[in-house]
Image (spheres, rainbow, N blue to C red):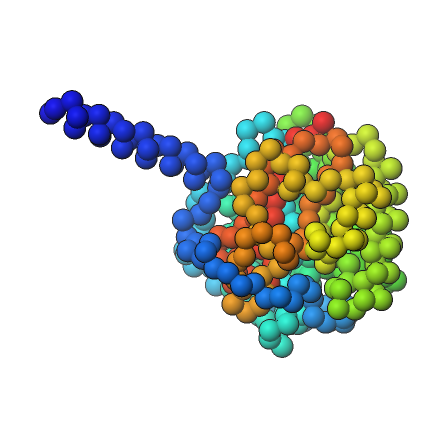
Length: 338
């Protein structure tokens, strides 16, 4: 074998290894072929119905079959040096799609299971998690997995649609409560939970929220006004702890309320604080036939953090059939607790 041939093979091996490391670091699944899709729907409102009492959809909409194709064997590892991973995901209420009168959760529920089991967040803020979604999450991720609910109900409603789940193997729940943005609501709330890491006892706070869509202007502005007030209260209450605020805020980055929320509360957008921004996509993709679009045009889902955190990585999930799961995509951040 001549020297030129040996050098060429060595160079090829180095390039292959470098490529594998890059893909592994970004936690990108090979199952997705849609990353070049464009033209997301211009309607950035995430819920097309104002009826927050449509919670009691038939519980039989959770799929009963669980084929081997649903099994995800690999896991996206937490960024080295990070303490926790926090995710936010609007999973689409069956009756709130702008593109269909009813969207069954059958099939979407196992997609959600696969997404959570691959990315393994320590805490997930879920929005539009109506009764059937609670049953599906309980089946696949609580009884059938490592997770438990936090803020599962409100003071007046048995199923909080702006709930959270957490990984029982990595953190434990210390305290939980729900603050109304609308009276007697099961969705327009600020859910608050205090967690403790099992490995080292570090405590942190996660909140989850979902103000009304901008299509209902008066309600949206009222919800956002209340959110400003309650967020400042919680941030002051837990000023010595890391605080992570998840949610479908229905508020794009280009709006005055987005910049106002940051300036009035003192929080920062985890996406722009991250040492590594893996992918940036519009978080609202529409339904059905959601399309991915790079950039920040329809980013209405956010993860905000206070000063007691460092964000190592932020990513938008565009694999695991997310476009067949919801009209939003999940976002997550790997965070150091200070």
